[in-house]
Length: 416
Image (cartoon, rainbow, N blue to C red; front, side, top):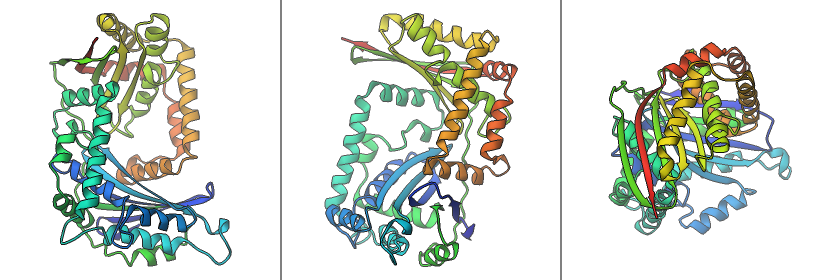
């Protein structure tokens, strides 16, 4: 439901949970210059505001609302960057008579958004500096993880677009360059220029919600966002080798696939990836890790919004060529249809089971609803989704596998 240009409220009714959830999402264009600013805004939103100016008072207020929980999240889809504020609170049925948390929770959200911890057009320096350091520490720790580091380096090698080379929370040097002023100004820009989506998950009175949101100064805005990205194929495979003091080496491969979220071949891609490396019964795991003992861990994953399929393997550096040949071999087997009906059918079964289980998670419902909204005619129900998975044939899997092309190879060589 549109409440202003570029501002929408979505009701997702469900009686599955004891809690209601409000997710306030701000989505803007993915831009290397603003990623770190937006990540810092996410940190500040979950820390304090003018009404509750300390971390302790902020948490105590949430606790007084029968343990209401607030969290923030940063995510990307294609060439967009989203910052979410999520508030989860008990439904009226589970708290004392004549008590309703909706208005108090909504008021708390309004304080977070429109009464931030600021002084003269910038965040309060003391709290901001702590949150900035926390984010830099978090990014530093992540960089120490060899798998995360290899994934980041692999994506930087694969993508042509500069913004997609940067992790969703930014890099240490980008965060370090921001100030309480630049982050606060970005937040004000987000409130007035970003696409706003407000998700109400649970049991809500639509009239009360709309009456409550009317208090928020949400004015119309013109937003042009690109939720899908697919770069041109290159005949040249980009390669990079880097050494690091570690006992394990990581092979990170980037493949391009031609379809996007909701396309006809999208469902064949899901089955293909499941057969290749997503699950414990997948070809890469059972053949290269378990049978041949060439990898400590190995798997594959894909991003339907950027056209990137990643294969990763934790190996001994001396096994690099053997592991690479094994990955190519298993991929070729799927291209040529040299796989068992058992692998094909078991993959479909696990995909169906995971899809049904995901319906029990409120945030999954939010993402499914959001995808339906932004991709318009590509929206499908869970029943239709499961039916399309069921109708994927072995020929469909072979066809999509033949269209997957290697574009990048990053090797983190462990040095004792």
